[in-house]
Image (cartoon, rainbow, N blue to C red; front, side, top):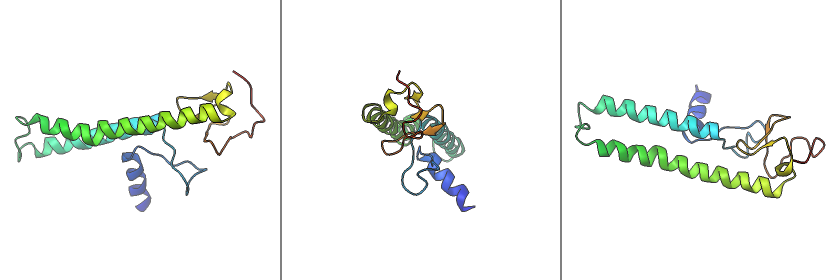
Length: 131
């Protein structure tokens, strides 16, 4: 049950674990950001619909809109900026950034299907091919 709550926490915080960095670092992907957006939005909508009888949320729709902005859109935007910064760092500072098998949108080596960081190159430079 504890693993379920840990996975739910990571999902709601727009992050996912990688096998390589299980204790060190979480890897941010576009899929984890979008999944976090969907789950957070669903939770807020369900809560607002269930509480609409107690609080007059139909006439105060702006309150739900502010909650969606501060709990869904703004954190997702920040995570996406962080994702782009790390992706640009990988693109400029590693050998993988200039390889034809590097997928910048997911920071992934398409041959080995592993996430790339500045400290970890899946092939070690053996399968590198220029773009």
